[in-house]
Image (tube, rainbow, N blue to C red; front, top):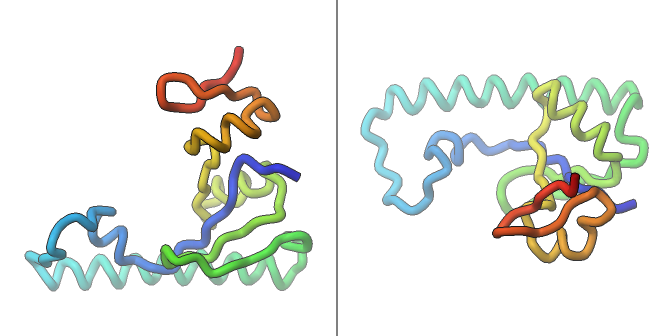
Length: 126
């Protein structure tokens, strides 16, 4: 099965706290505000993890799923159909990585999803 998406369970609040900008020195202008935001993010992460654990324990999902630690501070989910991954994304439980952002992937598998690579991005063939 070729998937367009893979799921990502984000565990690390640091990229969000840094606004996904790792090109600066990482200066924190207001530590109180940053700590408050970190606490809020960790609470959100804990709630998502608890919901995912509930789904795993109920065996309603993930019978076919494979989980791996990724270097970016998240757990990747593969082996589920795209529709199930999108459902989890819509519930706010995971993030999605779209392989269609990669030119080589689109050139190799894009036809399976009605995509071609044009002007530096994937385009749906109408």
